Length: 436
Image (cartoon, rainbow, N blue to C red; front, side, top):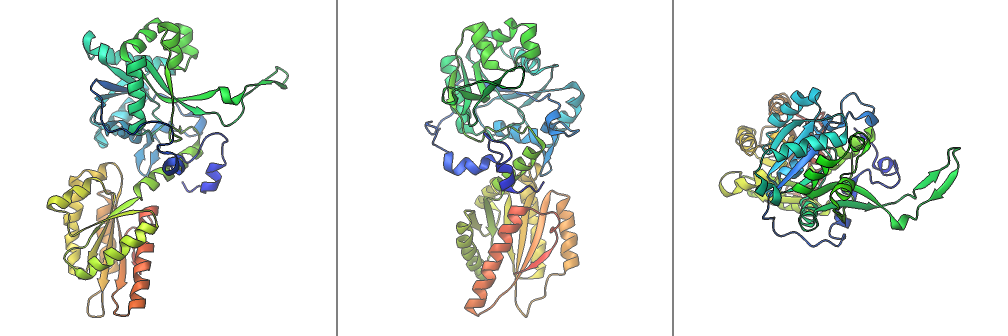
């Protein structure tokens, strides 16, 4: 899915095709206080995922399309599962996709998910999810519960915004995300001429997530009509109409962006790649030369706005790095040291990182004229085996030199190659030995 970034940003006025573009500049600028604590009341989620994805023009519904080998809906679920104060997630899926969704939950080990059969429309599916939650708790527990309703194809929601939406719902009964309108909204006559336009400053785009006191949204769905089920889409309108609950509206970040069209899948994959390529962990072993190279890499990575952790191994206290890193750079002096890769692979698998995304491991071989070079065929075979474990193995060979200028050039080349491999995660280069 290689789509030029400039093309994606120009695709559709009024909505960023690449939400990650805004993360660094917009975070903290929406007037919301930083989150330092969780919540002390039960919170659950309803994810309607029964859409057919007609606007993507693909046979596979967009929520099940793969991004880096993982279905889009799995990214969305993970955004909620990683929030400790969210207790459960009800995924509402079409009956014909129930087996597929069951397989996704098992394969990616989603632990907070319950599956519920969807309805013929969006409101019917959400209603099924809300009613399923009503069966779980006693009346007193439902009184204290807040339910978040979100789209399965908005995978980039952050905990900070979820917190503010949840607390607002607890206080006001309902809350919803909004975004400014970028384009002017106009009305046309039946003949296709301009009738009138709306004053853009007075209006906002309604987005997801939305949150509600459980009893309020439950009552709204019990009272709504067949017309609401057939034609309605706005949950906030239901609780206003049937429960007289006026939602607190909170401006959300640009990352509340929805995968709607085929091109959006390419943009979403670009976002995921960007997230995965922000950091790496260097394993130096006991080699002082490797440590010197790692320190030089640290400076080069900082200039690329990437974080680099440097550790001697992945055992003991250093094992914690396995749970936060998706990219590892491991140094070797001798070809025989490649056998130590199995320790790294096993540790990565034990940390369950390979369940969510392919993990990149880059072997940097520090050699000199007296040392035997890595055999390309043997390395390719090792990489092929690693790929079956969802590990992408690459190799970089660097010749040690006492000449300072030549060594500096080699270090720069190592930084260039390793950062590019981490960023691109190219399957075509798996098992290749590149020369620095």
